[in-house]
Length: 46
Image (cartoon, rainbow, N blue to C red; front, side, top):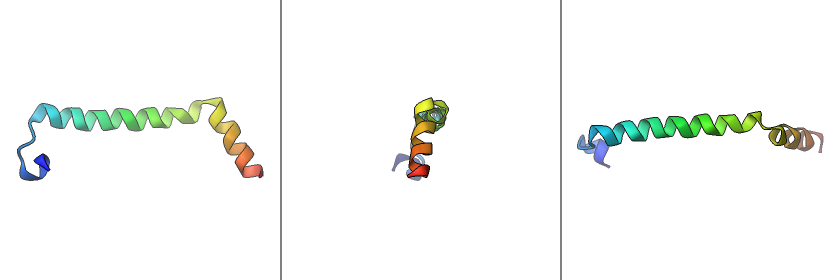
């Protein structure tokens, strides 16, 4: 709501943007785990 009104402080805006980028990156790293590939192969074969 703050950002729509243009009253969001700059440091909070930066933290929000960078924080979401880190979350997306960490979520993508889950694909590198062996367990994720094994689970995907098992589901595809079922």
